[in-house]
Image 1 (cartoon, rainbow, N blue to C red):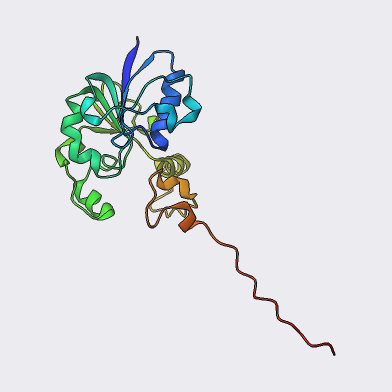
Image 2 (cartoon, helix red, strand yellow):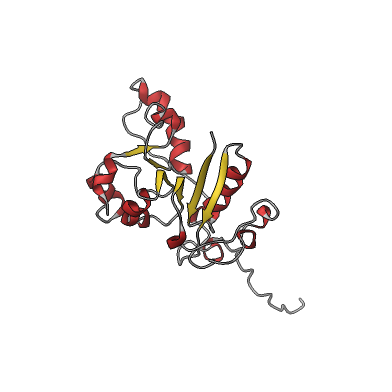
Length: 209
């Protein structure tokens, strides 16, 4: 059975990888891909690896039509603020931000420093890691993306936690600056974060002995 999948915020790293995966999916038809900044420009302008494979232009978010699956690739906090709008567009919404990973609004606020914008929707969200939620994923209408760091640590610790050998764990994760996304920020832009080699002290002239 084929399905149509569209993407909100398709100009970043996750959007580009989604497009690559959807292009290779035998049952997926790529619908619309939005970008506020690049609307009207070809997708391959920002994802050159898709040249000749995805022959579409970016649209604006307001131009997204009803579809079977809608991926939200937006910054943390924005998906929750707009979730009712996007759930009305698609049968299944898959949010790749952190907005629906935690079911407890108080826990969300303690970690992210702000109240959740759509606490009622948290009860519907299914954590999108098959090893954790395989039985709940079929038929779900809202699925939360799980994040790369969370996936790595969950899969590593889950077997131990299930037999009661882990009560509390601290994960010390070393990541590259690309994890901060394609949009540079004061604390995430690669030239700012990248370490610089120490500057050698200037050479000094010495008098012959």
